[in-house]
Amino acid sequence: MTRIGYVLKVYPRFSETFVVTEMLAREALGDDLTIYALRPSTDSRFHPEIARIRAQVNWVPRPRRAIDMWELLANSVNEPDMRTHLAEILPAVADLPGDEVAQGAALARAARDAGITHLHAHFASLAGRTAWIASQLSGIPYTVTTHAKDIYHESVDPLWLRRICADADRVIAISRYNERYLHSVLAGTGARIELRYNALELDRFPFRPPAPADGPLHVVAVGRLVAKKGFDDLIDAVGILTKAGIPVVADIAGEGEERDCLAGQITALGLGDRVNLLGPLTQAEVRALLGRAQVFAAPSKPAEDGNIDGLPTVVLEAMACGTPVIATDVTGLPEVIRDGDTGILLPHSDPQALARALRELAEGTVDAAPLARNARALIERDFDSRAQAAVLSAWESTPELQEVH
Image (cartoon, rainbow, N blue to C red):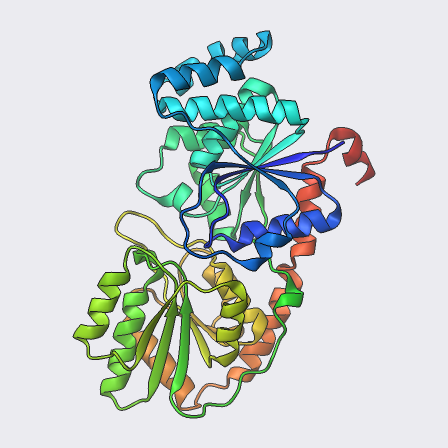
């Protein structure tokens, strides 16, 4: 029997709706899932969809003291083969924090005891390292889905990235851009890289044609308030339009480390009645916000630390709903926002270009209706969570079940 262990740094995590969507689709297929979380959540809100997840959630113990670390290791690696494997990987894990190694051992013990047949880690960072350790100790194969920060950020250790991906059963890239990058940085490792986009439960995102402009142009942006989202460029663009006498209102939903900085920028530009920071919203609240919006803005850009967006799920949600999207030419975004076809694509870090695109929509010189229709067609074709789940399920089935697939 196939039993899948999902390895996640934090669960539940407000910003990672794609993980919940993926697990829901797999459970709908009949997959038997168990969740292993390495850190508790510190989020202030949670999506109601989490309540639909049937999988048991296990928080992998994290030792705080050296004596607890050694006790956890001893209790976890309590079979001869696991002790042998631990000795074999000690040179590799010697540079890791001791609590990570102990958590990897605890995951190996828990997965073996639960009869887990395959581990599935999201992000090739902490979750990927922990899955690697657990796999080395237990012999349970694993798959890792890579995203953005875990492969692009300046903190990424290339040795560990190559090690995790080389030993994975599959390495999943969430965009063609990421797939090309992984082929480059993993050259010579033998890593089996597969493209598999994050997807949506399409029934939760009904399409409605974009409404004609009536009053100020209503712009919506959603995401964590961090530098790579480019929300400062959106605020600048609203300032440019306001000075030009173009009525526009922007709602930015999310929470994060840049909130105070963005609030200060809004105040400095005198845009307190034009730009609203809404805080974190649930998926249902985001859908309602998209339904009221005339345009969705995704002004992503590379951050100074190398962090960069992958392919934001909320962009796909806007496209599914029929909200016209303006996005920048960052990583996977050009794969879905095809300029003049499924949306408007701009160079990143260019508030003037963003202001011009918003003005064209506000003045009706760009017809949003065909953009919205084409965007929905693309989402239906390539981003259905049922299709995504079927592929993942087939990849991670035990050998005897793979023959059935």
